[in-house]
Length: 103
Length: 103
Image (cartoon, rainbow over all chains, first blue to last red; front, side, top):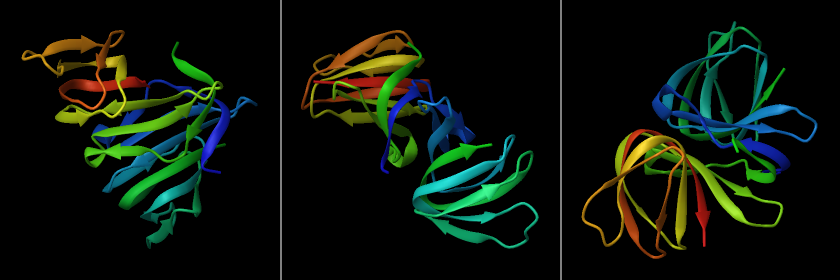
């Protein structure tokens, strides 16, 4: 699915790391909130509150998941999960378009 | 209105100028297409195809409109129009959240 249908979307972006990560909040018809975003090539550390599933739409990254010592590569069409109240290191190799699912 | 309701939104961002400008395409229930985006502080030149109305949600910029010699300041809550097939110089002073209307 290349787009969300029948949703609400914020007019103000969430901007992190001076714009290296930009996302918008999307609310589905059933009230579920997700974010749709893009991360520019960079090495960043993200912190989670709720558990997250990062669904990659396009691009490539290398991620060190919590509790692991080696980076794994993920590409568009793949996903990875991050526990709540944790953090992960991500190296974005090419602009990473994603949908983030929470909870 | 702080969000669009009952719309479709792309899962892939439009990325310009190495991510200094990121936007998403939003399609309203009546088929009208708009973009919702954010420009990080920078000096850029944008080209238009269709005429555009830039509705500023938040932030501040200085714009030299086509045919004018002096920059004007625009802020969140204000709008400016650009003719089709033209270009404009924009200096973004603080992260500029916008909705772009076409045609």
